[in-house]
Length: 360
Image (cartoon, rainbow, N blue to C red):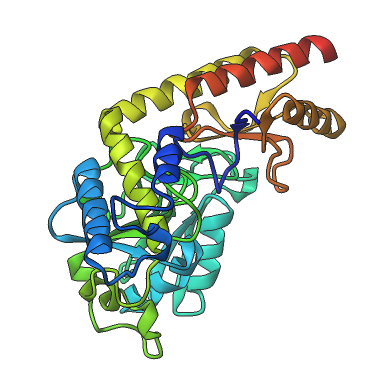
């Protein structure tokens, strides 16, 4: 069976080199006589795996020394509660709602204090990013929250919001490590790893040290307190050890590829191939305003549900899989993360051209 081009939004494509390396080490990790999957998280071998993963991530992102890197379970969705539990000292937070995940985070925060929706793009099915240069930031807001790349809707902030001095918290699940970022602009930058970095089941939280305190909302579980995990080096309880190991391999792969500057260049090149075709196609149309387009997630439609379904079915048969769009947008969506090779995007565009000719 040859490998398909997997356009899934997550769990998503992983670098083939990494998968091969992981397969080679499945039964015997570097002479330990066992798999990382069965290794104690308290062992010296695993300690060096997690230390190295953190070191490589810090190098890739130029993470300042006053930020902690936490490898946590519960996925990005658990952060929707963990963030207010740990940060809502004044019981006020501002949310910019640009998609389903920001909306869910906003709804969750309402359980812990006053969550204000200070901007939204829901009026046009989240097809754009609102102007965030002069928002009504609450004077007593504990933080301002965004989802930086919207997996479902294919939008991306090109400029971070002006938070007027308030702490910025960002969910970067679907654009994690796709381009360089200035970590110092964020109080918390976090993401589920199953889109652009590793297997499902983990979230990486990069948090500024002054936000890690014992002063959390009453009733916050020990496991949902950042300090618990920061003090224990992400080893308070058994972490997702195998996922940390695979993510570590991906960090090494990214470094070998030339780091995040190089990834950004590659990602722009890949996205351009697809967007250029969509912009001139008579059959397929992108759903996002041009200036807010994501490099990672590209939704597109024909405008005809039956034609969309036919396209997805035939594409799947041609080895271009997981192209069905999210139910809230319909149509198709190609997720073209770091590990998707340029050849995959070229194959998709070639198939779309052929489909358009045959079904014009």
